[in-house]
Image 1 (cartoon, rainbow, N blue to C red):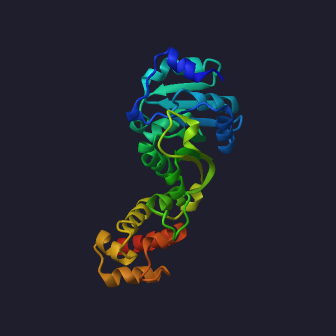
Image 2: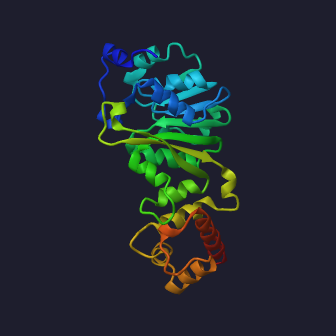
Amino acid sequence: MKNVKEILARNGFSFKKAFGQNFITDGNLLSGIVADAGIGKEDTVLEIGCGAGTLTYELAQAAKRVVGYEIDKNLAPVLDETLADCPNAEICFCDIMKKKTADLEKELGGQYKVVANLPYYITTPVLMRFVEEAKNVTSLSVMVQEEVAERLCASAGTAEYGAITAAVNLVGSAKIVRRVPKKMFFPVPKVDSAVVRIDIDRSRAEGVNAKIYRDVVRAAFASRRKTLANNLMNSFSMTRSEAERLLLSCGIGEKARGETLDAEQFKTLAKTYGELKWKD
């Protein structure tokens, strides 16, 4: 790999705090991330936030095709140099969140894997977009703040478990595959990071109304200090007896709290609530 720091300096690039730019140059770490993501010669990879192209380069060595999205157009000359020997990599300079998911997937042309070193401020919206909307993504391997990684992979009943965990677990299984100390980035960020791999299996959500599932999960975590019954009452305008009957019909204790329910229990609750809703 070329000396990226020299390329950045030669092109007069300056880091923009607003874009959360922290780059990685360690070759072993970059190749490790690609291996963690399970990238093979037949894979199409969508990379979000290419930065200086160091990860893009490693992905291009392993994959059939890499499509990268980068919001900072000032990185164009840097990426031209970094990826000069990567004919299978193409870069789109735009905000991926402003592109419709259907249009994006049409351009990718089939199944693909997402790999990204995400700026912390867009972690949740990016993840939720692909978890909830994408039809052809098979996995997401994302570098996130370590604290967020713990939340994504948390077990029900733990302090880290929350709405985003339950949302991911509807269609995916998440695990931390690599921890990355902050000293591995430049500029050095304030916190350590971790790579989370989420393998997607849409069959896990069969028979579940995704919107109702999301509504139930949001209601359950609306206030962690309150019981699930109280949160359901407040979110869905239910009486206490209605909320408690709903929970008991799902095999859930009337004093249970939202953070104690795993994805299967949330699916049962969503399905049962949905049936009651349509009866009304």
